Length: 530
Image 1: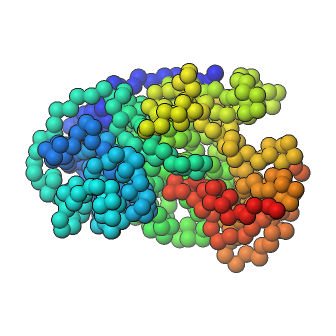
Image 2: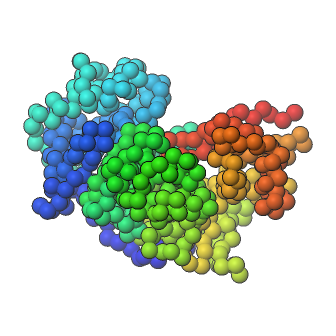
Image 3: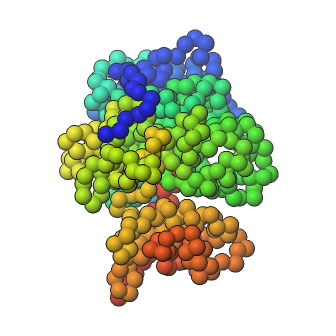
């Protein structure tokens, strides 16, 4: 078993509200918590705390509290923070919903999470209203933050001036949020995260991810995703940094906001790192304020990360986690220059890890002569591990074993310096003539080609029904690239059994909102071999 080199930290036994806002000092109240680049409006910590309490009071007056689940369908705008923390302060549970969902998908999540309220904004109202109607949520329980006839809005709720209720619950067992796992390898499931889970993960992350009140943090990753929820929304607020919100990613707007608002810390997903490394637009903006860029939510190859870091002039870092871990379990500390950016860094405090051989089930405990362990599935135990999947005890039991270790489904190696590298997912390893091939390794090689801007690799069946690696490649504009060129490029850099044996040039790689490659969509495009 392996533990964090940082040792443990104390986890306060308090609610998320008390942890984030109860510790505000008088000197911090007038610091800026949120900045809306669309309007330039700034929200101080004093104002934000007052809004959270007022909304909790208005919701409690409508019997929203312990036992109530509220759906939150909203892009990254300052009001998201008010609603999210107002619902938690009232004692209710939030289920955050992907802003890109269709009405049918919204309805499905509302029903699955047993939500009786929905909060949204006017640009999303058509889908939200259709979903609410289908899920039995009445108009008086469909809150439209920026106002719509026949529905409550945020302004009128806050102006009621009601006091926040007295709420008592156990932070260790009371479900704060129901985010949904990405569903890239199966049906998306509601993940039950307690107040303690969320508090613990912010406290764990503080020891590794260095944020200060002087930082301006660009919030482009969606708050509805656990990465944005914990590392942006909650960690940044706990560190009293300023969050600059972006409702959606657009590269030109992203670069402009970084430049104009002098953002210092960027939390991103790999597609944004690829853009920072390769897109010509980057050279047209002043990004000199950026000191740190941390990538997470999906694998990132080291060469692309280093290229992006040099181009922006910032320290590039990488972290690892999953929704079921609240989400952070590993990250590269800024001061650890000995850790390559291709890795996911060290375990955060209070984390115990195991590596288990995917073939034999044996635990891997020793470093090899090359200074690293053999690859094995990463198992994680700690205070950030979810309570379980909502209404799915069987899936919970398959994921969390009797010793409390969560089976991540990711294959990792531990290096002598105490840092981990993710090789790939257990279910995504390609078995070619008995050899295991990691798609992420081939994707990193492909992205090293100057005419390739994005790539994904999956296993497909050949004419003999043997699994072989196939690459989906997005060529740079104006590139003259053929499938044979791609296969030859990879063949020159990998062992013979790892060669890409089929290539398809595509316009885009399907990805989730957090940047994960949706391999199941690529597999669905493959006709069965005959």
